[in-house]
Every structure is written in structure tokens, then in C-alpha cells.
Image 1 (cartoon, rainbow, N blue to C red):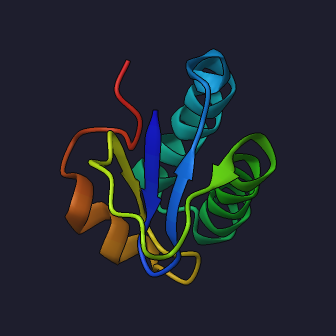
Image 2: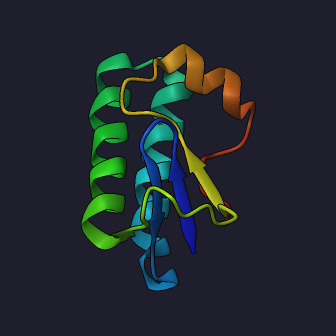
Length: 92
């Protein structure tokens, strides 16, 4: 699967990592719903770090269709809330 991180580029991840990413996504969604800004920042950082740790960056000149789009590391709780509506970042 190809993941795009807004403002950073694309990363190729094996589908076997989806469960770990879904767990972080569930935490992030709960923090969005509760308005926990500190928890949101911590979990967003953990999610993006996990994508980088588990995946392989695609070259900057490569443009593949992205199956997931994650917010930038500096995105605010309000910006992500507006992007998502009622859905999590990761389908499933």
C-alpha cells in the first residue's frame, strides 16, 4: 500500500502493518473526538513515525496513487478534524 504524508511525500508499506497503524488511528480518532490536543499531537507523531519506521520512502520524483493520506506532522487538531469528518484516517 502507498501512504502519502501531506508535505512529506509517499511511503510504501506492506499490508501486514495495517493492524498496528489502525490501533494508532483509533487512538487518534478518540483524541480528536475528546479534543485532547496533547494526546492528539503525541499519537499523530507516533503514527507518522510508525509509517516511516515500517515503510520505504518512494523517490521524490515518483507519483503513485495513494491508498491513504495522512496529515502533516504539524497539522492541528482542528485541521485534521475538518479533513476527516466522522471517519478515521485508516480504513478498516
